[in-house]
Picture 1 (cartoon, rainbow, N blue to C red):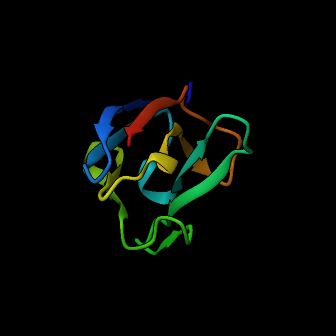
Picture 2: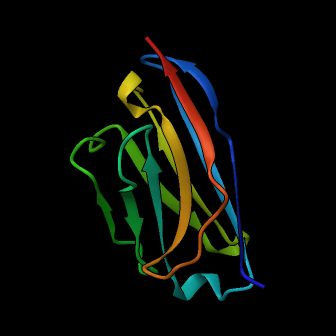
Length: 113
């Protein structure tokens, strides 16, 4: 019954911002680590950001200083704030219960140059 539902994607110009949300159900959210992955055309899926249940975060080098992962345990929701977006950030972004094999369906982020 585990479900992860992403929202907040779309089209944005380079330098702009988006905030992705992932609403989780079917898990005890507050004890799980969460993560955001992304997959660009022709590339492997990569880990973008991770948040432990204790709030410790980890980021890919390519997004450090621009992206922020956060969570609201009361709402069972994890967020990815994306600032200073670049065309190379264009990808389908996936919410994940880290490190398990539970995934959202993915949401497209397109950054125009």
